[in-house]
Image (cartoon, rainbow, N blue to C red; front, top):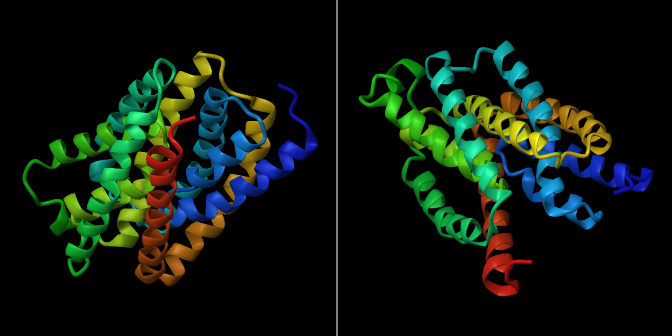
Length: 258
């Protein structure tokens, strides 16, 4: 398809806003995927193009959190590998089948995530206490593989679920969970980009400017998350999850899959 200046400007604006949201609570795909589709980008190209731009934007947020020592390095190698492999499988599946079933599963998972957030809201442990739990490797690998597969298959909200998983399963506080979820999300984006790129479903002329916009948005969002702390992360997380739930209920249970 022809990528016009209007398409670039519209999509860059969407990716800038999505970058801010992603850096704080995840869920920026709720903005980027619809904006690409609205501009006439075919579904598989929308997924591939969006993943490349989001991957570069997430990488910039990782550097910001790393400089401020919010990353828990013990969990990251396994988290990165499992998330990337899960995303490769999910992206390959997206190229083969329809995403309606995965969307319906996500609709059912969102209320569970909200309940878990409420139930664990009072628990805040530092990194050493949180990582003393048994079966840490199993929790990290399961979290990365399952959500990574969803991210590669469909995507929107994956950052929120990485955040919730780290907060609930590993008992990290929300700011630290938000920071480390970026590594998991970066890995899943990377796995997806490799898969969609090998299938030729990435519009590089659109992805690069959108990536720049996403990087700027992620930098702003990362600074906001670190300055204002847990309160804004919790508010953004609830807002993103509520929007995701409403969007998916309409898409998969009212309007039906396209």
